[in-house]
Image (cartoon, rainbow, N blue to C red; front, side, top):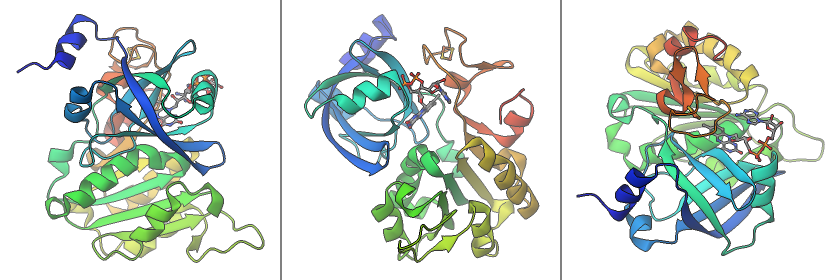
Length: 288
Ligand SMILES: Cc1cc2nc3c(=O)[nH]c(=O)nc-3n(C[C@H](O)[C@H](O)[C@H](O)COP(=O)(O)OP(=O)(O)OC[C@H]3O[C@@H](n4cnc5c(N)ncnc54)[C@H](O)[C@@H]3O)c2cc1C
Ligand code: FES
């Protein structure tokens, strides 16, 4: 049966739906986690997404920006967005107080191919803000732990204070149902850090013998410079090009395949992505 939300969307797919900012917390310098609930309680209860999808966020009078959904669909009722203060829309979001109303439309994009990934080992490789979309996948898998094989999380940031969801990810290190390894490029003098130091590829030796590349997927998101080195490591390990999944960004306007702003070759990032296999990316110009 079609819900009111489905009908409204059919009438105008670009119409943002009002959502209330219920809480926000600083994660790192210029990175905050914002929690929203749709004003329509029924919609709030029924709305769901696939890990890796994004929403178009609008702040009144400023415009829209695509933002990955950072919360897991297994923990519904609230939509969490981890946002870096970058410009007009995100700057205006940072100025909002609790209870302010924003517009959200979506979820958009393909998301991770969860059904294909079931039964396989999965290694998540995140750099910096790349943790935002991967966190949704991470908690989806941990909340459905029996659906997946061996799990590993490799996460790197520049310094300890840049690590997003620090308490959450350091808490995972103790868990036995996932191998979690954290690294920072540098530890400033006087700061405590009991994990690895170096770029994220330095973490690969920890998990190489525990992941079977013939039976595994890798989910990668991070700054452009990270991809080159991470992809080389994954290929050396024996990962198939169709088993390396990357969350990629392009400038977007409509989010629904109508405006062609996000076109790369013959694909639109908003509908064919933002999750692409390495195989896709190799065949599209300037994708990585
Ligand atoms: C699918 C997708 C998911 C995203 N998820 C997140 C997320 O979870 N958290 C988050 O903080 N940001 C995310 N972004 C990036 C975010 O949409 C941009 O930073 C956006 O420009 C912010 O809007 P703004 O109006 O605040 O900044 P603007 O005023 O539009 O721009 C600020 C600066 O960012 C540059 N810029 C604009 N778009 C991009 C882009 N796509 N890539 C690189 N630089 C850009 C501009 O040239 C300008 O220098 C995502 C983008 C995409 C396409
Ligand atoms: S953002 Fe308009 S086609 Fe993708």
